[in-house]
Length: 541
Image (tube, rainbow, N blue to C red; front, side, top):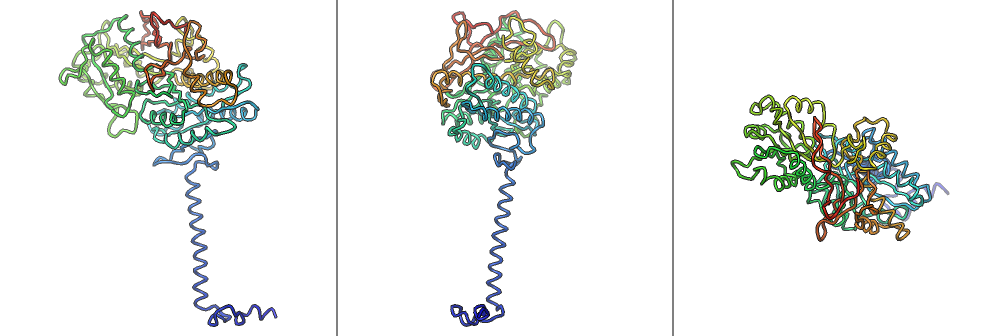
């Protein structure tokens, strides 16, 4: 009976011509079509799955490889999401932050998240941040996170940090800001702010504007170009104009050769920092020092700086330096970035029109601005050239770690405690790790958010939102006791809305010390404090 059922000659539902036992041509074709469809579909699924998996940096599928350089772009709370891309030291401090996040998650405290928006890797010399700056920035943020989470006044709440990688040239801000906006809805730890934003760049401002559409406040650690302004952007660094005003106070009090002045300026138009610095130097010093846009005797030399994915040779000063030295220059305004200082001095040393050395009683003085005293700008090579040629480098800085570490009347009261905490936490770091200023500035950027979160909890309880934090960031006002100021490593400060409308938010009462190198000359001018005047005095730093 069973044989009759399996005998296809008895399958009445099958067409008569197909009722035979042996596979015929149609059977073979149908079978191969079926096999081909299965194999092809499986292969397509497998390749598609492989390609999709390959585009992620790790099994967690949090960060995607993006662009020709295959950078790990996106937002994550764990360093493992970067796969093998991270520098080991950078991964180490990110691991500490991740463990602090985990402790907060398991603490039962009310939690909020803060994004650290910046590059996390550096593959090329022109990247937005060097490996050292990335490392020091994260170290400073970690210290501020730990202070808040373990603080006696904040025992019922905690901050988690998320890593938001926008790429080494800041290109991938759009997908990152979209993902950050989605984190506003996180029930466990909603996003309340973003910190970081290392470069005064149009892409940085695009990122800030994208977050501002969702009312997410951004607190920059190092932006200083005056055009970096938005109603949701708060800057910890003084502006380029404030740096220039501090330099002006120094040169007026200490004397400079006004008759023999020159400006050496980075000519790039896509870097808002150098574009703004050129303009600020021109406006502050041009008339008094004979620097103009005269095509014949303007006394402005130009070069192409190293920062960014530029084509052609960068950091080449030959023609600009030759023109500078041929004019008998003694005072130079260098409108460029830190990385340009050494090639500039090397060019002075090798250009015949500059001579072998300047007179000891009439040295060449180079005036510039910087976040801190980056060890690369005070290297043995730079010291040797400056000493041998009688060159004095005069820099207005936001952080003077070498001097502040020893205390003194001009040192911020909290800096030594910060330096001690840094040394305890990162004993393996070099002794000059704080000199570039990034650890202190990133600490202070998160400290500003910490204070805003604390005040928002105190005023309204939970849950705290990004709107609450934004409001608190803008409410501080300096006074003799600076009760509403941010308790900061670089000097307690608050924010001022400098201009009407969606602008402003620069720090009030931030000190700007003047550093001279290679020989330290004490300034005859008082310490410059942002926005301080005869009518509005700042408390001690």
